[in-house]
Structure formats: C-alpha cells, structure tokens
Length: 308
Image (tube, rainbow, N blue to C red; front, side, top):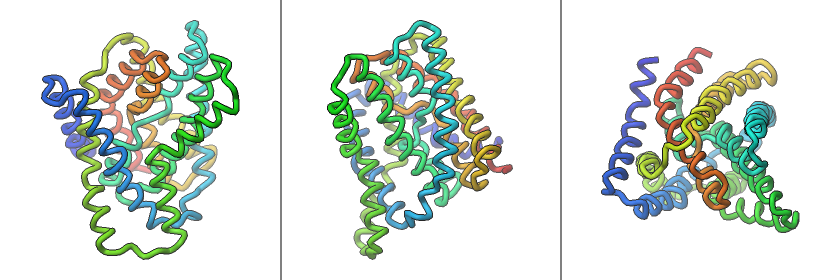
C-alpha cells in the first residue's frame, strides 16, 4: 500500500498546492471558476474525446458492469436517503445527501488518476461509470428536487434533457463514439492537438479541485463525516460485493469500478446544491472532508484492487 500511496501523493500534492493558492487568495474564486471552466469545457473534454474516439462502443457498453454499478450505488443511495429521512430532512435535502454518497469526482480526479496509476485500459470502465453518474443519478437529483415545488413533469424532463445536452463530458463521449463508429481516421495534427490540450486536464483539474476546496466551509462536521464515510467506505464496499459476488463482473473492470467508487464527493454536487439552494454548506463540508480523507482511502482501495 505504501508504494501506491507514494504514487497517489503527487496528485494530492497538486490539490494541496491549489488549496494553498486559494487560501492565501493568490488564486481567487473568480480565477478558480475560470480554470474549472477551461478544464471542464476544453482540456478534460479533449482527453475524453481522444479516448472514446478509439473505443469500440459494442465492447465499451458492458451492461453487466452498468447493472452492477447501478445496483450497488442504488443501495447506498437509498440507505443514505433513509438516514436523512430519519433525521427529519425533506426529500430535496435527502436527495443531495444521497448524491454525496454515490457521486465521486470521477471526471476531474478519477479519469487522470486511474489512467496513470492503473493504465490506459482503465479509462473505458471509468468513463462508463461517469456516464451512469451523469445520465442516471445526475438526472435523478434534478427530478427529486423539482418535485418539491410541484413542477410540471414535462418541464422537469426538458430541464434534465437540456442539462445533459449542455454537459461537455456527455457531448465529448457522444462525439468520440460517433467518430469511432464512423471509423474516421484521426489526422496527425488533430491527434497532436488533442494530446496537447488533454495533457492540461490532469494538473489543471487537480489544481482547480484544491483551489475550490479553499472556499468550502467545515460546518456540520458530524454530517460531513457520515457522508464521507458513506462515499469512501460504504460505496466501494457495496460496489465490491455487487461486482465480484453478485454480477461477477470481469475482474479488471470490477477493480476499476471499486477504485472509482472510492473517490471523494464530486464538486458538481455542490454546484447543483448551490443552484437549488438545498444544503450547500452540508455538501461543501462533505466535499472538503472526503477529499482530505481520500488521500488514504484511495491508496488503500487501489492497493486492494491490485490483489484481485
């Protein structure tokens, strides 16, 4: 585990550097927002497109993998929502707490980290996890939050669909597979452009994560620790049981799924919570604590996965 920990340390060192830059206001919240936008819309999208443009969609779309991940995540989601309900929270608050328990930082942290630590072959399973998170759970929280106001179902579905179409990760995945399906050759200039732009995704994303954490609050510590436990321990354990013993997913893909489930709470959960004004401080604290604790838990998860 020490060897894996030392390999993950540079990733968290860049996150720490971003955090320090944000704390001393050398990197302002406005600067962080623009860096995040650059990574989200350009660098990470280029990286994802380049990967998916070389994948065979028939081989990529493993329904056993999808069902195993959905089943495990669904159990943790329902458990967290139930605990929230027992604490007297409303549906919208429970939905965001459940979101914290299953939505990891797959895009900004998972893709670059798993590609470098496990290998390029880990990218396909990670992108499949990202797709499920965005399409299923990303849509679910919007639907649940909008039911509190008795919104028009057609309008809610339209909002969900438009949100998916505007998400550059979904767009880059779709365009990449369209390119792959059409069997179009990648021009040398295009490949070099994507490689150069995609190379900025890893350091840019990690630095942006750290800088954004500098503005996160540490309120509601007990709740944040519970949500961090749900995300960093319960989620990967549930995924391991589902993938290895129930659905019997391919060992390598199952290992990537388990490691991916051990990632800390994603920043986009806070963006949605802030947008709908539903428990943003709680979500903010969960992101802060889970990211700090994941320095150890991710290394432990990857070290265990290596033994499969």
